[in-house]
Every structure is written in structure tokens, then in C-alpha cells.
Image 1 (spheres, helix red, strand yellow):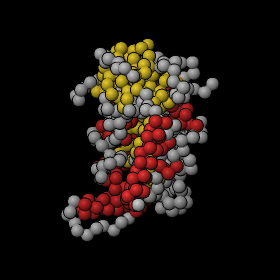
Image 2 (cartoon, helix red, strand yellow):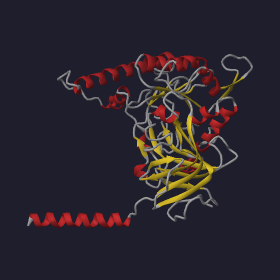
Image 3 (cartoon, helix red, strand yellow):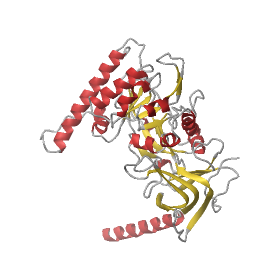
Amino acid sequence: MKNAIAIYSAVLLIIVGTVYAEDKPAPPKYAVRAGKILTMAPADKSSADTVVINHGIILLSDGKIEALGANIQIPKGYKVIDASDRWVTPGIVEAHTHIGTEGGFNDMVTPINPELQIAECVNPEDITIEKAVTGGVTTIHTMPGSGTNLAGFSVIIKLDKSEPEKMILRELGAMKIAQAFNPERRGGDLGSTRMGMSWSLRQILKQAKQYTEAWQAYEQGKCKEKPEFRPELEKMRKVFNGEIPTINHTYSPWGVMQTMRMFNDENNLNVIPTHTAYGGYLVGAEAAKRDGVSINIGPRVVEFSRPTYDGRFHAMGAEYSKAGVKNLSINTDSVGWSSWIAPQEELSFQASMSAHLGLDDLKALKAITINSARALDIDDRVGSLEIGKDADIVIKRGSLLDHTTPVDLVLINGKIVYQRKGVTLVVKDEGAPSEKG
């Protein structure tokens, strides 16, 4: 009897699975016929140039880039996206934002919160996600605010909200630190001064490093005694194991230098000093010496006279580039519910302004694509158009820096998630959402 029931259950599961598979059609395969493909992939390991393919084809299947080049044959069964008069570029990667979360900004009770993670708060219905996609943004690194020294852990998400369960690319994006200005507490507790902030951060880093090393010794068989489990330090193990970076809200030459010293020099951690305004570029040459340091600027991309008081405007991107910084990315710091910080869909405008103010065009493009991805250690998935990477693609009549032309079509994981009203680049597909009119 038991065998009969087991056989019946197995048959039922097969039937149900077959019906479900038949009800859910396979995702379409696309062939993108492009006028110009700006891959953002390096020409070779020793070159600063990027591969540009004129009049090329990109084949997309199973959410990935299957092939791309100038002499690709389009197989049967592929829907053609005719962008032969347009630019095709990677989706934009945002390295520092706060959109797409619900009730996950600042937890202000204590200045050190290593147990928190904002992945608990991802809200697919946040209208700013829909708006971001219209600007070509496909991947975001969204995080807690900067009200405390260690606010918790950020999350990296894809902006295809049609499948919410698949949005999270990495649950723990980075450890979020804040030094200077925002986290300077006024409650009279420890952390009201920069001395106090530095002491508190060094103490938690010391504990987490020792905790990580104890677990490494145990897992490698060097120590037989299992370390005491400390849940508040578990997430920091990923930081000290090199699995995720640290991102640091910081300002001024002092702040940028202190971030590099404390996290990279003293603890050998990959760190992203972010914002870095008020003259942070004055220590740009020091940042350029460190492989584990990636500079992230924005929403301010130009400043006047600080801290030198020389009566001149300084473009931060150009200044960092002049200092030799190659790992440079640009952010919006968008918070969604406020218009006084750059909207998420205008990240390409941030790069465009940086280029207008003296940053090389190619470096500005890298700063919102491959450089952001590298800083976050997700460049194996996004940031450039290469075989095997996620099929995150933006199509428009000009480059991402050209704000006289809007985005026409966006794909995420090989799926059309946005097509501008009045634009038809693909064989009509009723399942593909377009701009609401």
C-alpha cells in the first residue's frame, strides 16, 4: 500500500510539474541588431580602451549574453530587436543609493549596529524603482542611512520588479560605515566627537577580525575548539573574508584618509570611500596607490573653493582622475521620497555633468557601469556586455552621456522591462510592459 501511494504521489508531481511548465512559456530569445555596441569591456588586460562594435549583433538567451560581435548569424527562434540606428550599452549600475526600501533608513538607538541588514526592507512597489529603469538603471546598491557609525549591511538588487523573488542579486551588499558629519551624535553618548567615532569603529573591527580569524583557524583544522557563536559579528565575517566590501560615508581630506587608513591599511579590507566632497580629492594620490580602495563621488560632483578657499570651482571627477584614481564611480545618493538629492533615474546625468566638467567621456561612462560593478565585486555579472554575463542592456539613440536623447528600451536578465511609449524596436509582444501613457 505504501509503495502504491509513493508511486501515485510521484506520478502526480510529474503531472503537476508538466502542466506548470506548459503553462509557463520559456522566456523569449532575443537578437539585438545594434548600430553601435559600447561593451565597456576592456580591449585587453593591459589596455585602458574599451571594445566598441559597430553594426553588431548580441544574442540573448536564458537571461544571459550568449554571443556578440560584428559577424554573428541570427539563429531561428530569436526575436529581433532592431536597434540598427541606436547605441547599445550595459545597464547602469548604481553604487550608492537608498531607494527601493521600506522603513529601513536609520536605526538610531546605538551608533554600532553590525547585526542589521536592509535586505529585510526591499519594496518592489517603490515607484522610484520604476522611474530608475526609465533612466537606464538596472542594478542598484541600496543601503541604510548615515545616522550611525555602523548602520548595518546594504543589499544589491536588480530592478525587474515583475519577479520580486529574483530581485536580490546579493543579500549582503556591503558593510555601511559613516564617518564625519551625519553620524556625529548629539545625545551625549560616545560618538559625539570624531575621536569617539574612531575609537568605537576600531573596537568593533578588532572584535570582528579576531572572531573571523578564530573561525578560519577552526574551519582549516588548525584549532579543535569551536569558537563561541556571536550572531552580532556573523555578517562582519564576510567582510574580513573578502566576500563583500565596506562602503564609507566620509568627507574632506581628513575623512577620506582616515577611511583608507582604518579599513584598508590597518585591516586589509576593500573599502569604498563615498561622497568624499569638501576637498577629499586632495588625497586622491594616496587613494590611487591602494588597490583595495575605490572612490565613489556624488551627489555633489562639483564644489567651490573648499577646503583650499582658492576661489575656484573644482570638478571632483576630474580632480580624482588627475590624481591618478582609476577605480572611480559616481552616485546619486537618491532617497526616493525627497527631491533635494539627485533622482535615481538621473545617474547618467551625474556622469554627463562630470564629463562636461573635465572628466574623460570614457571614464565617466565607466564610472556608472563597470567601475561601480568592480567596486561592489559584482563585475562577473553586470557592468559590461560580455559573453556569459547577465543580459542587462540599455538602448537609445545616443550614448549614456547624451541627455538630448531618452532611453528607448531596457532589458534586465534578458527580459524587456521598459520600452518608451511610441517606440517599437521588437516584434510585438503583449507580455512586455511599456511606458504607461
